[in-house]
Image 1 (cartoon, helix red, strand yellow):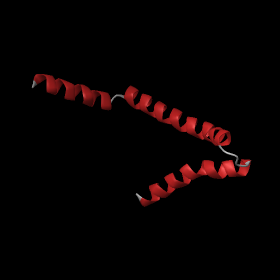
Image 2: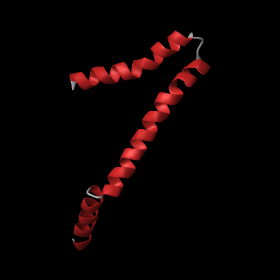
Image 3: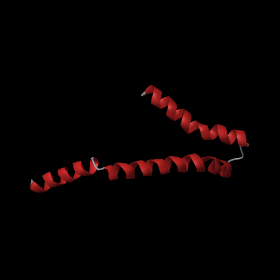
Image 4: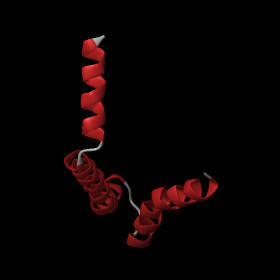
Length: 72
């Protein structure tokens, strides 16, 4: 019982820690920049699309995300 209370207290401390939030934000931003910067290159390497076609295909995830955000 004491051990459970201790772990709950430590979890709540971690969730309210600015360092944890900063690390989480950093990881999310790195992932988003990675997708934004490398997705066109990956599409170019695996397909025969023109530059305009690559731009259109690269925009699909962002369009779907905007659609889902407006629905939800």
